[in-house]
Length: 249
Image (cartoon, rainbow, N blue to C red; front, side):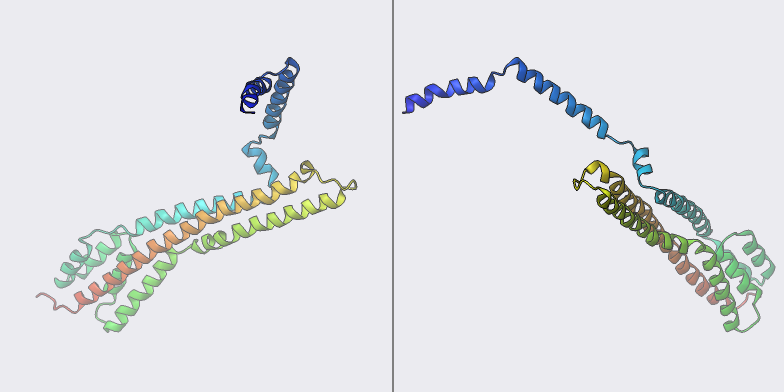
């Protein structure tokens, strides 16, 4: 029994490895058809974008708004955080010497929220300390509101863009079911359902691609503003301490 198996095994392997010219021709034709089919199925980025429907243009508009607001606010916040480290030391020297005009002139030449706060406090020197601090806090609130201009739009887009994408998903799936119900033959073909599926998938991807950067960009700018607020509060405390010091004569 062992001799029979060992004798027939090489013959079976040889039969499997030997193919006729007809089989080779059919195999080559099948490979060519598969390559042609893969080429026909390849879709470019623009075709994918167009397949997403009109909601993709809405997402493109929202993406442009996100980029504009983030860049504009980033530059404004970065400019607001720039302040000479010796600014408060010079203010302290001017006030201790009684040179109020020089201190106000320094604040006006320094384009910064902190400088505008201190300028308002210097202009209130001679009034009760509570009034001076209230005036400084009012200016600080106005400056923070200016820095936060546009951030609500980023927050809204970060939550609204994915919702628009999900809406496109629902619309695409509705289109799929409409195509299925319109098919009288009862046979479902993927080619007939591809349009609705493209709308469903591409709008979801587009919404997430817009919403995620908007979310992280909003949180980053908020963190920068909060850091500046802490610096403004520390400067206010330092300025109030300067006012409590005796004036040099």
